[in-house]
Length: 185
Image (tube, rainbow, N blue to C red):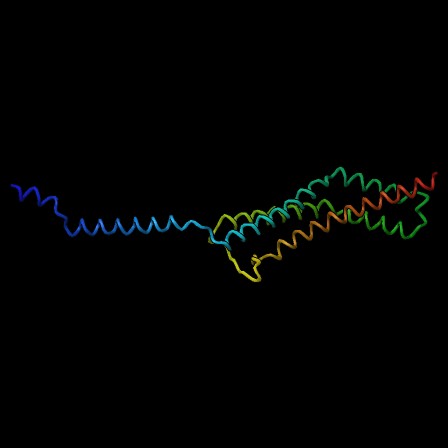
């Protein structure tokens, strides 16, 4: 009887194998969980993505700040100064006003396209950051390079161009206003 009760408690080959597998899995899991230090390149990569996203977001906000009311007001000022007697005979001023008018006539459309492009780029950056398998890191001179860095630069340059051109048209109107007020005095 004693032999029969001991027989059930002795390990069999199947139980030894399952215990071994469990032990190996436990050790692998333990070692894997201990190695939680992030890859330095991945951290730099994430910071680079955050930096690019932040830059794009600044341009996005700046472009959105130029609403249709501001554009319409500037266009009406340009139209007004085209027919001002003080400026009608000045070819340089008329040329500048004509260029400003052409730019502002397409500005809303260009702004919309640029905002969509920036939004798409920010979405792609976020997806790249979230999807570790999509990360492609190349270390060159301690700087990380994204594969398609040019597309992000293009979006920033286009936004910067549109913003600067818009502000140049505002400056033109401001300058003409000051010039007109000085002639009146």
